[in-house]
Length: 199
Image 1 (cartoon, helix red, strand yellow):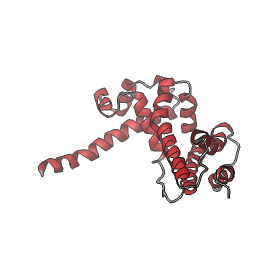
Image 2 (cartoon, helix red, strand yellow; image 1 turned 45 degrees about the vertical axis):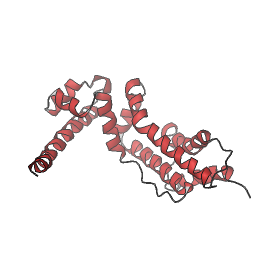
Image 3 (tube, one colour; image 1 turned 90 degrees about the horizontal axis):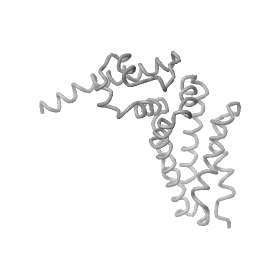
Image 4 (cartoon, helix red, strand yellow; image 1 turned 120 degrees about the vertical axis):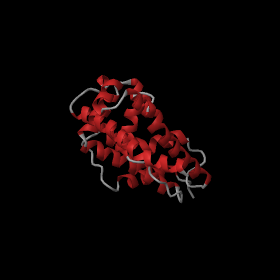
């Protein structure tokens, strides 16, 4: 019993430490410090903690940065699982909202621009955020084939690109393109028109 109470008492302190580390990193990025110059030592100094405190939570700065980006990104969307179309709209709308956040946040825009030239960080982000999302979308498409919502001869990997591609073009390549609320539905319905079973 005493052990549980002790664990509960320790958590707010550890959350406060994590928050000070994350806020320290965000502040340095806002102040224009390049990601490449943010060493664990510098982060620890800014947050007023020892390096060991950071390494207890994260294996290195890539993992720490990805964690911060995930925090800004919000949790992955909950899927209702009732229809392939509904789940695809939910997944694409999550990408749309991320695009909206990116446009309104100079900090996020700056971080993503720098990430492209930091292969280790880009790989960590890809493995931790992009690949799991891709697996979820492929799972939704496979279920669509099983349920008869998608033709059985459809190449699932290509179908994934057809659904996700237009949203990525709007959020990443065309910063002037509108990201209105009905966009996810319009993309899903346009692609489905060609991939649904006929008859």
